Length: 317
Ligand code: NDP
Image (cartoon, rainbow, N blue to C red; front, side, top):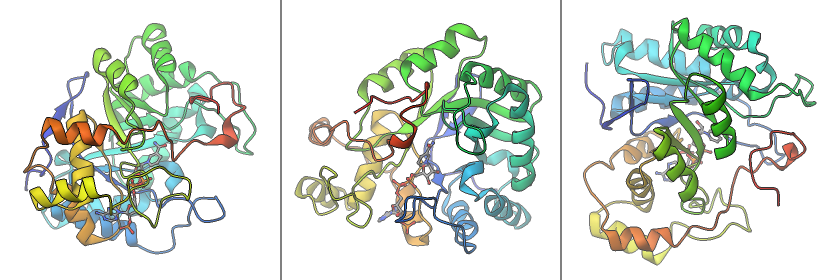
C-alpha cells in the first residue's frame, strides 16, 4: 500500500489525522434543499482521491453519500491500493438522532451504509437537535456527547468530535464530561478565518477541520453579495504564479499554514489531484499577511432557518 500525500497531525486522544481530506457533500440546490445524489460521481471521486494519495474522506449521514464512499473504499482495498488502517473516515450524526440512546444506533446505520466496522472520526454535525419533522427538540448536546463517548468506548468510532459548535458550547463539553472532543469541524476560508476560535482550540488541544475551504473563491459558487477575492484576484494570482500553483492551491496552502485541516470537495479528477498537491511549497510571512486581509467574518453556511433554536451556534445578525 502507498502512504498518503498529506502529513499526519496528532489528535488529543493518541490517534492521528491526515492534514487534508476529501469533502463529499454535493451542496445546496438553487431552491435551497440538498442536491440529490443522482449518479456515482462521489464513488468515482473517492476512488480518484485515493489514487491521488488522499487517505482522509469526510462524509455524513445527511449527505446521502456514505454508500458511495463505502463502495469506493471496498474497491480500492480489493485492488490493493490501500488497507483499511491507512484510511481516515469521518461521518456525522444528524440533528434528529441527538437523544443519548440514539447515537450508537445511528452510528451503526452509518457503518452499515459505509460497509465498515469502525469510523476513524464521528462528529455531532450540529449542536441543534430537531425531531424528524424539523421542529426543535430540547435535547442538550451534552447528553448527545455522552452517547458519542459510549460509541468510542464500544470501538465503533476511534475518535469523536463535534461540528459547528462555538467556543462556549465546546467549553460546556469540556467542563461537564470526561472526554474532550478531538476535532472541531467548522467553516474556515479566506472570508471567515476564525482567529479566536482557532486560538481557543489550539489552547485546548482540539484540532480544527476546515469545511467549505474555498468559501466564495469561485465565481460559479459565490453569492452575489459575497466579499472578494475570486480566482481572478491579482494578489492571489501573483502568489500562485510565483510557486507555479493555482489560486485554489494557494488558498488551501494558506489554510494548512493557519494550522487547520481543509477538506475540499470536488468530483472532478483533475481538481482532486490539484487540491492535494500543496505540500511542496510554503508561503512567506508577507504573503500570509496579504491573505489575512481577506478576512471579513463572512459565513457561507449561516443556517438562518435555525436561528430560533436554543443551541444556534453563530452570532445572530
Ligand atoms: P468547497 O469549498 O470544498 O467547494 C467545493 C466546490 O469547489 C465545488 O463546486 C467544486 O467543483 C469546486 N472546486 C473544488 N476544487 C476546485 C479547484 N481546484 N478548482 C476549481 N473549482 C474547484 O465546499 P463544500 O461546501 O463542499 O465544503 C467541503 C466539504 O466540507 C463538504 O463536501 C463536506 O464534506 C464538508 N462540509 C461540512 C459541513 C458541516 O456542517 N460540518 C458544511 C459544509 C461542508 P466540482 O466538484 O464540480 O469539481
